[in-house]
Length: 86
Image (cartoon, rainbow, N blue to C red; front, side, top):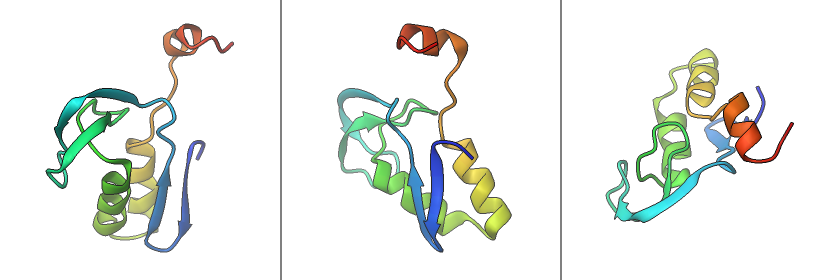
């Protein structure tokens, strides 16, 4: 599972290194001002809020893995080219 890990039970670490910054807007999870945008959903969201939400809502290890994969961006060929990767 590239770009994301479950470091320890209940702790999720997402790789949002390809996330974007947008205008200050309420986080969709906590409502506090956020500049960061979810790289998957493109909505205002703190990375820590997303990680906490996944850890709280995963029913078991399989669900945790599914949620981490669902909320970790995958680089497309177009995006890799745009970012200068091969």
